[in-house]
Image 1 (cartoon, helix red, strand yellow):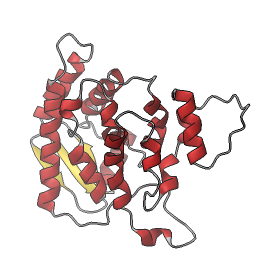
Image 2 (tube, rainbow, N blue to C red):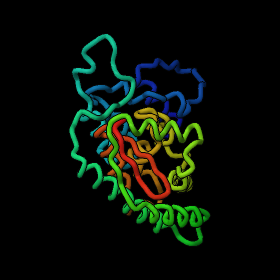
Image 3 (cartoon, rainbow, N blue to C red):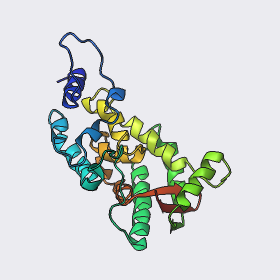
Image 4 (cartoon, helix red, strand yellow):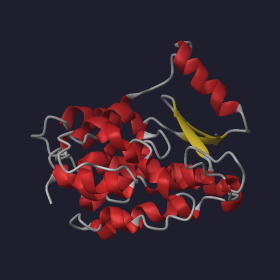
Length: 241
């Protein structure tokens, strides 16, 4: 099954009828919101990955996002459009521990980048930025939004995008865009409109990074608990969405 055959297979799973002579080329954008069609239980999502080599690994990663949903949220006329976490409680100690573990695992990931790679300089810069983070702070509800707003407005000079940029650059360099799984890229992103959640769920596809396959697990756990992150030059803030 080539990429376009797989794309038509996915569209058929979503219920879209394809005519035999339809020459439309399936693109990732056509599958935005695709995984929402299996809410809330995830029943049938295993069929998505059956035609993909190592499909079980992708299935194992995506199962927990259905498990975190509350079926009662889908009982009324209006249902959630995204996979919103936050149905489980987490102590401040647990949240802080996840933040500290994330920093540790990201350092390890970036240290794997060979000196000869084009991404080596950005990886080193990210390691230096992570080494400057001396404190993980758990914020009261509502405070993370204020920090994010200051970032948008450009009024917080301490905000650092180094880690985000370096991770995105590394992921792009380790992706094979001709693989069938590439067609699900937007579908993975639309789960939470969060690139790091999408990276975590797609990790088995990233070449030469299998040794660090769980580096974003702490981030995924924070998302599952309903929390966002905000980086500055010397602190990592964690706050409920």
